[in-house]
Amino acid sequence: MRLLERMRKDWFMIGIVLAIAGAKLEPSIGVNGGPLKPEITVSYIAVATIFFNSGLSLKTEFADSRLHASACVFCSDFDQGSWWK
Image (cartoon, rainbow, N blue to C red; front, top):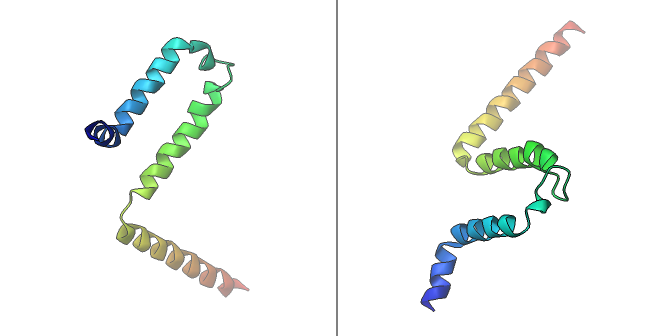
């Protein structure tokens, strides 16, 4: 039972070790032009995932205030834009 608890606690480190071991055993998967297409995966998908995870970690009070501010700016721009018609 202690091994299972330890694995649950250190699941990320175990995943990193398995990924490194897999790359050592079969490096052709991650080569440019290989099946993982690292030139696309790292450039776009990894960066998008990092920003998405950063957005998920924002506190809701901060996100709510930003949404409210952007809605106010949109409404004020819309109202002022209709003045000229």
